[in-house]
Image (cartoon, rainbow, N blue to C red):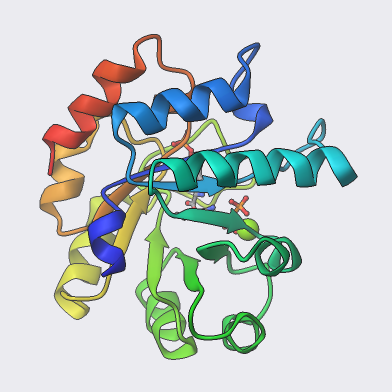
Length: 210
Ligand SMILES: Cc1ncc(COP(=O)(O)OP(=O)(O)O)c(N)n1
Ligand SMILES: Cc1nc(C(=O)O)sc1CCOP(=O)(O)O
Ligand SMILES: [Mg+2]
């Protein structure tokens, strides 16, 4: 069941870790108990070509060692080439039903949604889970939509109580109790973990919410 793996869903690329080594950050997060990882290498200074592929492969190997699903953001070809556990796409990344056909039924497909209508469409297209957000304002995505708040999470839980949903956007241990109470399977986080001064404590605090 994918929903069991979504609780603490860490997303990271080289842009998210300041001066730290992203592989060291990922391994620490895995050791501290994240339950899912998304490889999201994008932005102006992002790795390209062989360095990009090697970074992805190294992240995948670390995730394998800790039995944590490895999800690729945006890049369908990379997900297929690496036989990743999953692929995550947004509203501007192509038609979800077409992409589902391309990756087959075994690979997990996550789709970003910002409204109930998009959620309904994603489910019909064959998504295994949806991201819902941004719940709060985020510093980690320049082109994020306006915050949707926890109201949309409640609406989603009422409309699709059993469908796996992760909240995303500006989430911290301090503001996520109401998010989890709204009925999501998991919380997806970049900066609260990647920029934490104490990852062990931060991840434990997130884990305590479930
Ligand atoms: C779990 C999760 N939810 C939402 C997103 C955002 O996807 P998208 O809108 O395609 O934006 P980018 O991440 O590609 O910039 C996500 N990545 N993961
Ligand atoms: C990647 C992403 N997608 C969002 C969406 O709303 O779909 S918000 C977001 C950034 C999440 O980073 P942080 O935890 O640092 O706020
Ligand atoms: Mg995307």
